[in-house]
Length: 476
Image 1: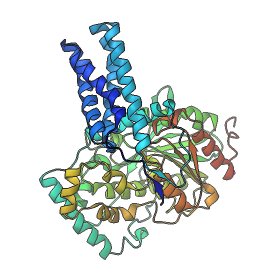
Image 2: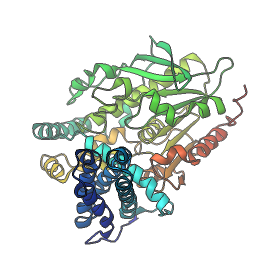
Image 3: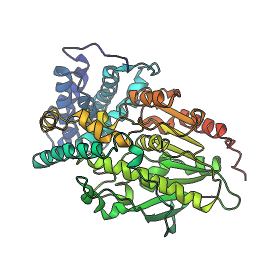
Image 4: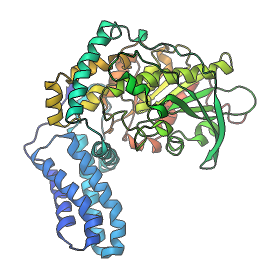
């Protein structure tokens, strides 16, 4: 894939603004409350500013700057009470400027790939990108990176795992690794309510299994909370209607977050669809750590293979459950971010879907994660045999870029953000080439998706092409 790189710089002079912000936050006052509300984010902004000035180009720098700047702006509100309006306003303005610098520099340094839409790099776009940088900074700062003996063990198991996958023929034929699940036999359901929305909470045993001799397989299958499939369901009484399966993103999987992304008012009431929102492995009530999504994209890198394998199994089992209730059911799939990855993966294994919409989709997990692995860890892992290529080979059997889609191209849809700092625009371009369909771009970022019109337009176009007649069910 051809690309155009940003011109390298010896010094990144845009770092002057966050340098001033950091110095002001840590040196202008001595009171304890000032240090709590301004000093803590100020240290993070100052450190990232020095790194940006002297070591430009590291994507982690803008992420940490975005995180520190966002915290600084938010904490400037209690500063008004603690220190007065004037110093709090100065801090907020300086942190806000640093926030824009993080977004703008991050966008400017990102390679431009052939097939992406032109980026309108104005201050509005810088603000949207700054939001992405702040969230990415949180992901990086709170990620669990295997170290010490854990890093050694993981590397050794990776070498063993790759050989086992190759010897069994699964890398050449991934479909032989992913068995088709039967419909669940015992399904439980209870009514729930949030945001004034009444919905069903449906669950059943996943039934997912792994070859027992695979490294880490027994540990994975021992996560009891992850062994039960859970979904939020909204369905209309009366005549059958089409179903939309909505697949959430990373660190989501709770009703509060999923309903804010997949609006019941829009999907269920305005479009009149039946809606099912499955919870991905390790998310929501299936979590095994303190937070939703822990150990999916962090922790043991090999867990990602099993997480994606189980995600594919679980999603296909949800489809089997829906189809067991009604013959000839119309089902479309709509995934966002990590959900876009799983929607794209599902397109290679189910030929009965009416359409698949992949929104801001991540598709190359190995390179996407490797980009943020600290250099010391990268060197050590490579020395132990776990380099980026081996990791890519291991994840080959769960890549949406391997299996040909089983849907007609007219029923495959991709939308993406020109200023995405969480999922680089090259990911949707790669999926576009694999599927042979264009990407619909919007001038925004990963997190601005909730305020963009493009996702709704693409979804309604997908419905119309599938013969659903968007909006025809609302009054039924």
